[in-house]
Image (cartoon, one colour):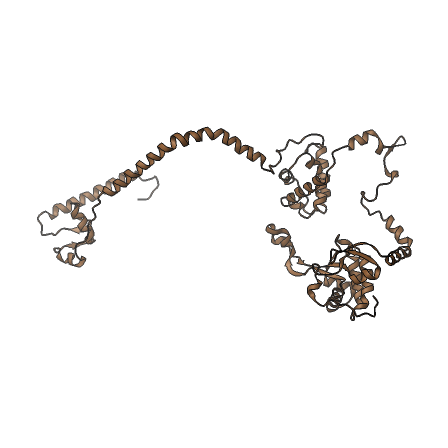
Length: 455
């Protein structure tokens, strides 16, 4: 396809998402920059500034293993020396060309609050959610380069080259300067699993390499971790990270590797959380996995942790499958089954019969019991008008007067007899004596006054 053909510009914003794009994923910044140089010609508004923005994205590709780039508008403005509107416009041109796609839209939502969850506190601070772009290879660029692609969309994979593409790739590899390849080999940034150590750096004694002696090999002989065990160790570490605050930002894989000496001895994540919670950790820990590896080695040398060849005296493994719980239930049933059978066949019927008899007797007593309740037989005003003239200090109600008469009790308190009666003085004296007696009884029941109390 030549540049004379009409350009294909993706105007629909929904098609500029990772889940809907037709371009395949790229992880290397060099490949993305090469695709951008080829695709720039197909957009009517793209130009040198668009290529500069693509180069800025390419330099950040190595920070993420999936080739995702965080788009900071302010930092990009300072880097390119252009305005905010210019940066946003040229990012749109790259999206319309299929070179980048949205992985996540930026917002002012606090990403730290989402990361910490229920343990978030105001002291954790604020960090907005950044816009994430995925670096892509458009299908038009793959066809121009002679790439053979399997699949469709973001999950496409490069599986080979056409004859023209193979010739083009060989020529590009030969044009690469030798200084660049030599510099890449001499950087020494590969991990030990990729770049083995040289023989000159190994310790030697008597002209022999200690790496191949029987003593060293016997010391290094230990049970290897299978892929399943590695996966279980990573899962255990992820559970542990929810409990130990200084491990939450650490890489689960590196942390699981540092914890292998204890995991091999049968430590569960509950045991590890209990142990790590007692460690005095610096407040600003840069590399938790390295600190964990150093502390485990040091504590094992000082006897604070069991060595590798000694079984751990910790609690038994967690009952993940529920086998111990099921055996406990069977043992409890075996022990208590005779008592339950005796209760069910002998004691329970008799207890139920006694309970029924008690309920029946209570019900019969309630039905036969008579409670006298005096009832007003006339209006209150009519009743008071029918009474003789009396002196009232605290007039009782008609219900109280009827109750006193029905139960043959003296008049209620507040009733005063007429002074015209011959024995009214004696009744007043009896009432005063009763009041004094009740007051003396009340004082005797309360006891003598406490020392220092007022009159």
